[in-house]
Amino acid sequence: MLNLDILPFLGLECRIENYDYVDTLVGITLGPLIFLVCLVSLFGLEVAFRYSTIFEYFQCASFEEVEPAVSYLVRDYSLNCASSRYKSYVAYALAMLFVYPLG
Image 1 (cartoon, rainbow, N blue to C red):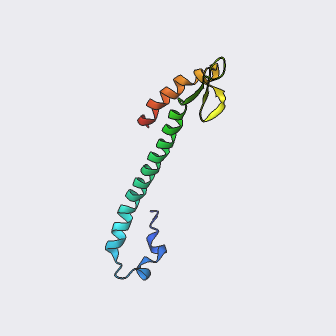
Image 2: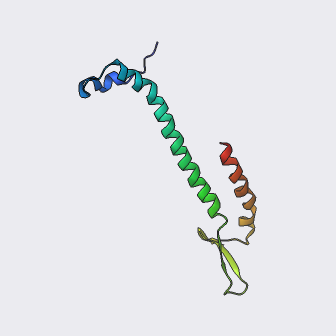
Image 3: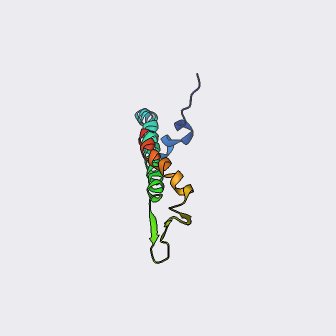
């Protein structure tokens, strides 16, 4: 059987006063759970960044001073919000708002 116990290699019993097998038990059993919680937290942040990007897609700045009035994406002023390229991805961005909560 393969033993993936890395705690003995860390030498914690030499570094931590009163370290015993109970500490090993807790470290081995809680370690993966703590790792999982950290991973889920990072995924939550990652999803937040994605949502931010999706919502920013709908932020267009209108310039009514020019004739005819134009509207450009705030995050990328090279993208005209009235262009076919922009409009063709509106449905995609809306769909992604519902896809990401599903995982």
